[in-house]
Amino acid sequence: MWLLDQIVESRVKKAQEEGQFDNLPGQGEPLHLDDDSMVPEHLRVGYRILKNHGIIPPELEWRKEITRIEDLLHSIQKDDPASTDLRKRLRLLQLQVGIDQERKGINR
Image (cartoon, rainbow, N blue to C red; front, side, top):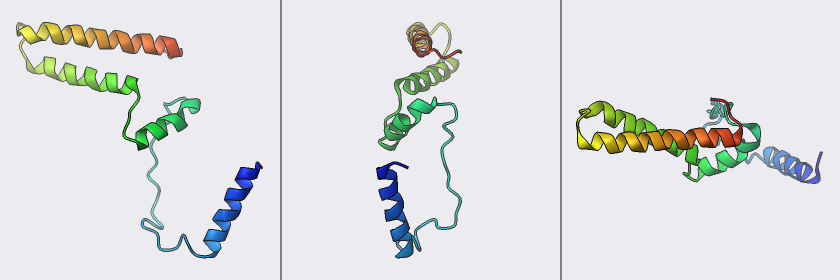
């Protein structure tokens, strides 16, 4: 066990003995952990930090925009002038996601 781990363990144990963890909100309730099983293990800590600060990774932002554009395209007529621009933007985002996945070695 690393020195830091030993220090943390001893401080947690001391706090438990002093009752500092008693009567905390949610005590006795199950933890609701995010499912990060699809995130590569070496990226999980970084993604968690980003999420806790309200920042999402670029690829998730791209996917959200792809979904938003697809929804918009379903709600407008094909001959609407905005349709062409939306389709171009959609294709660009899809290409960006594909390039990003190739760069990371992720199979689609």
